[in-house]
Image 1 (cartoon, helix red, strand yellow):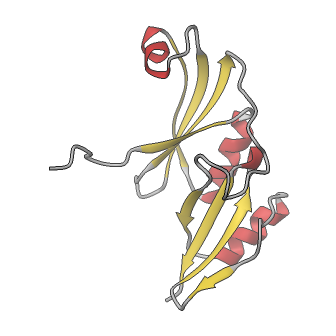
Image 2 (image 1 turned 120 degrees about the vertical axis):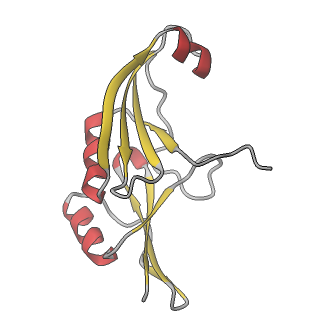
Length: 146
């Protein structure tokens, strides 16, 4: 019997919490809550003494798996590779199914977020594209072809 009950959320550490939050809210996420995290409990769990961060928890409209954005106040965040490609080890992208891929891509382009490659089609099932979001976050968007 599996010990996993559900997939709750994915966490992404960012330098500019408001910018990243606005990006994901623009994709359709809703803010579930925002708070400062600090204290013995957090220090124990993440293994960083005297840490302090601000987090925003986002959820899709259907209440599914969440997205936690975190920005460290203490200690300073460590910059990652802002142009990381899919071959770089580690968490490389987050993917969302969308209703109108072209409309979202147009809006993101107007906000300065461009495609990593192009729009691809997998058989007659999916249209998909990768976008480089704030701070280099790789976001995959897929639309089911009906």
